[in-house]
Image (cartoon, rainbow, N blue to C red; front, side):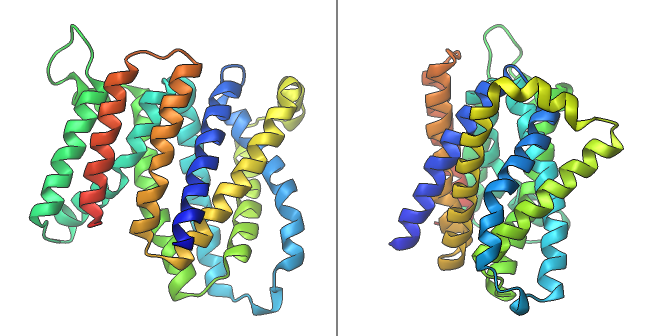
Length: 291
């Protein structure tokens, strides 16, 4: 049960980080926040490199990790944009749809079959999404059409697609290629910081103005960075000890914790209904991955 304790610790730290991120994003642009947080997170990661066995590293795992980190950086930016523009209790639960999207994609494009349990899980995911997005006075189809018509929801769809790929690569790097969790975390955060600086360069955004605007929230950046290093390491360590489906099942509890805690702190609407929707979503995701 050691993996469960580590995975649950990752869920708690992830929930605290998400609530803190929403608080800072009330005042800062999501892109600027993501760029700066990646650099602060790297600062707290640098001591870990002292424990990395550089001589044992191989080109293939590092190359895959480099590519995976690009996808992870893009996914993180999409999530921050979603959290910035939507209620926390509405944006985060959508991340639970990842296993359903993966199963549906495999069914459509590569001919995988869907078991009765997986089909039931997909139906629960649809039901949970409907309950989460339903609004009084709108059409019955609005909870589904909003993903096509709302740009804010496009960020969620993009993040889901990216996380579907990165979750598979996590397991492959740790189990098949036997990349050490500590090495993976250290280089992943290094690559994230690099890619966000690259994003800033190509979009013409300068770091100095970002720093001036973010100075009042410096303490929050430090706190979020510590939580980020903690939950990423705990997640990687748990995935190296147990099947990724089991770890992600525990990690999904962070969605419920963050949505309810953030919803209360930020006085978001319809929390009881959203709580029911999140429970249905988590149940659906659990069925899809076969737990």
